Image (cartoon, rainbow, N blue to C red; front, side, top):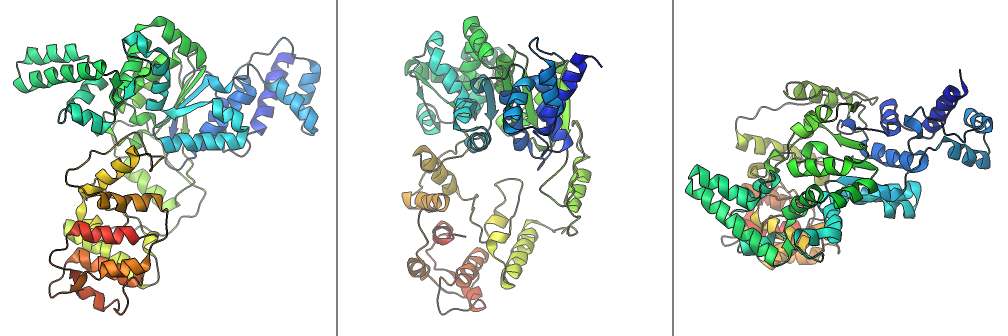
Length: 530
């Protein structure tokens, strides 16, 4: 082999050794630094680990692991270091410098995730691996946060002040209340108010015309106030990059590497934003799972991930299929179920873990039978010494109250005051790490009901069992039985929040006549601190 061939081979082996803790496909994804890359990451396959190590590789070695180029400064002494395995610490540092080719500055990497929690986790793990300075300089954020930073620099080019105000959902509702869905969809499609109104007028549909008129008025009011709503943040960033070449070139030069997480859940505007940022260097890595696309109702477009290889002709695709979360039988069942889906790229999850217990399939006759089965199973386990926190119930949508209402779960998502409570806590900066998605407030919600949920999220204090007993004393014996109250009382008795009543006797308890379900839930949720 020539010197160049030996050097490329030795350099790759040296860099690979730094990521020996990864499995083969994870390591392949980490080392593929150049050009467009699609990572099809199955559930539990360690995609965050791959993202962290990929960023570490870019900062430490640049494109050294993914090129046949040899620098003019390379020497035989460098090659000798790369080929050795018994290096001293000083020799290893010299070998790392020899293996690096254009190592990238942290601030030239942008990693976009969907939630603040995911972004914070990314930063924390980068900091543990590379130190606080690198973690601080990397753009690891949500789409909205990244857009705010871009717009703060050049929003004036669109006629907004760079110090523009961001309207949250409640602010928007004060401007216009019932058409936010239609407006959001129009913006997601990149339609201006004038275009929307023109199309509506062409249909001669009175409702569409009215929506178009309100859309235009809504936009004008926000613009006059120097404000943007959450949809505007992405919409105006795409406009800014698309219409102003100098701005577009600035950000394209800056971001040499663009990483997008949960790509299967991106909408049209997010897709455009990612493409605009990556067009400078062409180094875009998207991570997603076409089998986990669940946000179509929010405008997510599964075609973004399905058509990635069509958009980027030289794209590489790597499948992360080894699962670290589930047993073999669970994965086998999941693989067989998802195989029936159409419009997917296909992958088969597997694990080195044991097969695990067989799955149980219960075919309920209706939703009430389903709820009874789940509640009975949980209460049976509870009677045999298990805790409620040892159980999890997954259901397709929040409109499934039969389960959540008849079992003592901490998340009573079907109650209207839940949404208002979370929104209130989020807007007041008390609950952090949530996604950018907010909840619409509901009328007639008391501050006490909000505080109930807030307590559960913050867990700032231990539950007051004496106060719990006093509150629960509002429940008394009754001849008729309310399913939800029965389970509530059984839980309270089991937790010893009510003294002098056995678990068997608690079946005859229900709320007093004027006690509402929300009040009962308030009591339970407030003191349910598992």
